[in-house]
Image (cartoon, rainbow, N blue to C red):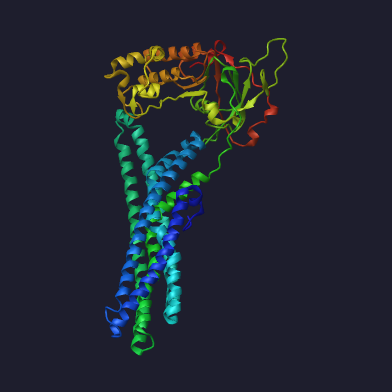
Length: 603
């Protein structure tokens, strides 16, 4: 990251306002510093030389006090707005990183980037505060106070100005050399923190399973190792910061001392008047101070700079352009998967591979196949969360059944009964997702009451429709066992409910919705027979309501109740363009296999 990265101004509007304000305060501070030195030298030197008394210079002392007060006021304004700008910029960047991570899709997050984004959006970006509060103001002061003061010194005393001009570049040179080392330590510290955060997230997610298997102590040792690695990198960064601060202080002090010795020698020799000597002697530290502070504060902001680099990497990563076409009505639209293939990251595998299927309105379609074949990935493609690497998803509007009847005119693969087919990639994602409901294996349940999670608001009344939906999914039995029924408070992720009870809650919420397409990811996994029966009844209720259900199934009971069964297959081999035949070279997708003809696909 550059000292003032243009990407920061591009992505954070609050940063632009803050830079403008800091530049203004920097110019004001430069003027006040020069005025302070000149006023103090003109007030003291006549008294020391006996040319005037304190009464004669009282007005200069008054102006000096006013300048000091003004400088204090400017500093207060700058500090106040620095903290506000840091808060606004961090909040803005955090929201943008999270939004862009969602746009990249679940596959990108699952490919090792999820933990990185979590650490970056929580602890990582908080380290930007020292950058805004300490480093950036000193950087702008170095660009204003230092040249302004040096120009005044050139006008007062050429010899002192030349000494400062020769010694001043030593500080940036050493600052650059030390900064290279500090950046490496800061990057290593952030990486260690991300590894530690990822390990803790995984450990917390599977702590119950590890405890049940008696394996909870092994990950603890790994977390301890990561914690010690983070401590080592943090201490290394601090060590370099302290050493570099001492070096910069030594250089600045030595340079000011050199100026002071030359001024003292010339004062004794009578080659310099006291007023000019005092003014130059007071301006010299102000010339070195901003640059010295830039070097010192760079180390405290290095962690934030490293986090900002990662944030910009997420924000600048290109994403496919979103579609703009309005989504067709799924009550009269068949979803056609035409040779869909997705390259599994890190596995050298297509999962799924050449998937052809039709999802017709008002029917229950089951995706079956071995583990790892790509059933969940295929569902993500239908949800619009993932774009296929091969093939496409077409939306054939018009009649629900696309396959022509015997003797009827043939329907081309790229045209449905209601007109030209629409590619899902061309559809507005928001309009598409408004018609789609998704119930994953671990339903999303927020901290709050059962009423809030099912109905959406604590103030919503439990009407007859909600009671009927709860009875259909078996949630009524769950409510009867809860201490406060609908108003029972649940923890994050549904803490307080079993896995089966969480599924019933999620299915009740789905029944009460009006989304036409419902995607269920193994809804009966890890459930007993009684809970499975309620899930099957809920799926039947969805079908009876005329809604389309796409269910990932492993159990025979779910496959048996499906209207259509689609077998998902994978292929292992070299992934490249030659493995994917063009759409024109493949036959049109056949009709989805009826469930009665797919008994062999059932586990």
